[in-house]
Image 1 (cartoon, rainbow, N blue to C red):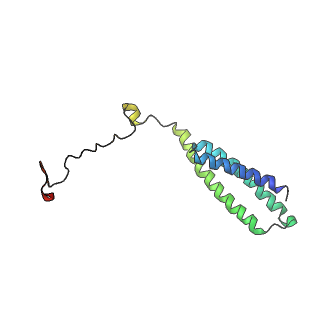
Image 2 (tube, one colour):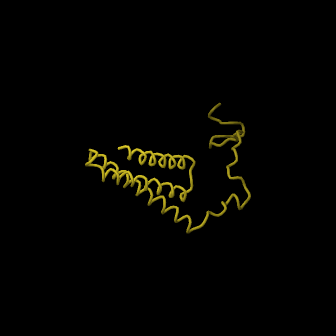
Image 3 (tube, rainbow, N blue to C red):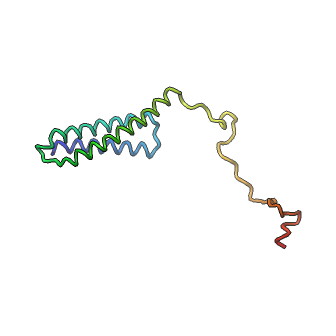
Length: 130
């Protein structure tokens, strides 16, 4: 079992790197590489469990859980890497419309002064409110 702990620690380390990249909204190509690295570490753990299951008395549930988790990782890897590949094929996004026009990217604040706005407003205020 002492041989399994470094494999587990490596997978945890790579998992934390994915979490950190997710928190900072890393680009898909970087996320793809990180997920591939994690998948490799996960595969090493799975192979260890499969080869040492009988000798070490590892319950079959552990292997089943690792396989299910690895399938989820593979699905995520496929999804993220496909997005990264599409982005590389289409090139970087061009300038936004506001960049081209030279305008601000934010909407200007609305003024606080209200100048009427309902059907019943007149020049002297709302007739119904009098």
